[in-house]
Length: 248
Image (cartoon, rainbow, N blue to C red; front, top):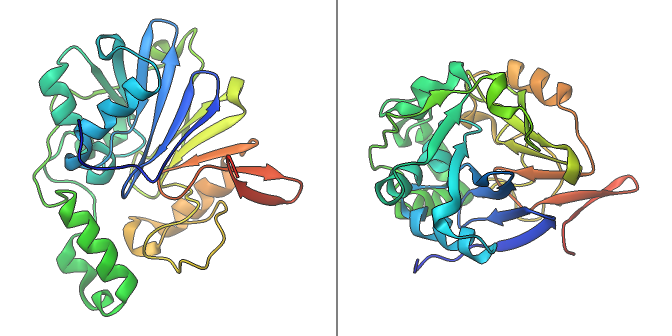
C-alpha cells in the first residue's frame, strides 16, 4: 500500500476513473480486453497508481497497457515501477515522443533552468513536492513503442495530436464519456499558479513547455467536449458557460 495519497479520485463515467495525484494526474480506463492507464505519475507514485487501479474495481492482472500523453517524468516516472511487477504491460506513445518516454534524457525543464523563478514561493513549493516525488531519479522506459491506428481499433479511446508542450504530446479522446485526457496540453490548474485561480481549461506555466507558440495552436485545435481530464488540476466539466470541478 502506498504512503502517498491522491488529492481526489473521481468516477467521471462508467469505466473511467480520474485520479488527481499528489503532484500530477492519471486515468484508469476499463477497456474491452482489460485495463489501461493514461499516464502514471512520478517515480514515487508507482504503488499509488496500482492502488487506484484496485480502487477502481480492477484486478492488477488485468492491466494491459499504458497510454502516454508525453514523456515528462511526472507522467512516465511511475511506469518503471509498474513494469517491474507487471512486465507484460505495453507502453504506447506517439512516435515523436518515444525519445522522451524512453529517456533517461528528455525534453524537460531542469531545476537549474528554473533558476531565478525559485524566488517565487509557489515555484519553490512545487519544486519541493516534485523532488519528494523522486523527480530527480533517472527514468527510462526502454520498452515503449509508437502506437499505430491499429492499436485503437474497436477501443473507446482515440489519440489526438497536441504537440508543442513536447514534440509528440498527445491527448486522448474518450467519446463515450464525452471527455478528453489532455496531459499538459491543457491543464485546469498547476501548483506554480496562484491558488486563487478558478480551475478551468488553461495553458500550463510556460517555462514547462518546449514550444509555446505551437502549444497554443494545438490547444486551440483540441476538440473540447463536456469533460476535461487534465495532467494537473482537478477534472472539470462545462456547466453553461462555466467550468466547475467534476463532483462539486
